[in-house]
Image 1 (tube, rainbow, N blue to C red):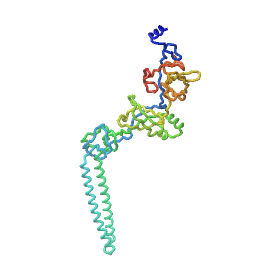
Image 2: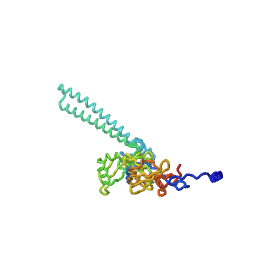
Image 3: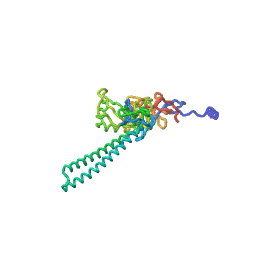
Length: 384
């Protein structure tokens, strides 16, 4: 008996007890598992969008003058009310001085006419002035009063024309190239001196088939304005990267384009870094603003028997359990789980054929689970 004990020690001790369901002397079978995530599965629709400036201003010359200075960097950002162009002021300043002198002259004539009329009116009352002379004095006074008003209008016009020699930015945004060089003569009929596009926020327009919009309105029993408030918009840029800011639909067009059968929708986005540029294209992805959180089950984990769909779940004790589930629509490489899972469960995605419910297994966790539609290739790693 003693020799038997020594022999057992030499051989490494007594044999390990086999796991339930596993052949004696063999370790539990290894399976690849992943955790079931809970994600927003609200339907998402994609449309090709066109980036537009919410406000675009063409800077025009409103008087005829020589371009004296440009106070901006072409292609740079400008602030609202920033001075951009300076036209030659001297002729317009002279016109203002002339109008001021004309107003002073008209006011002096009016003052004299008032005195003359008052004198004629007094003499007429005393019987020393003919009525015709009084009428003439009244007409002269009224004409001089009109001259004063005309002179005031001329002065105001001259002042306005002088103000037109300083061209400022009516909005903040990015300014384009200057059309004319300093020293060029510009007129109200000239081409725009430059164009400013508002950059932040910015707008993306995309076309939605009218049947889709009509179906949404019928199902929601709401108008376009109310529906727009319940939707959010995200963007995929031209280089297939996600834009970092969500947008909100600003309004939906009030007519269907008969040539395309679509309705134009406009969505506004923050653009603090200026990544969105008017004229660029991007993919607009529209979904409900209220999330619809549901578990997502990898297609590889879904199994079917006579009772319906099921999955094999690995519990905390590493035992396999069969769980019946009710599956919804497929999203990329996942099924939406309507019933049976709440999220966080470990489900078997590889090795389903070699295990049975109640059996102890050795779970191997995926390093990058394909639960999300955006997940890439996966690599299995040993679980703890």
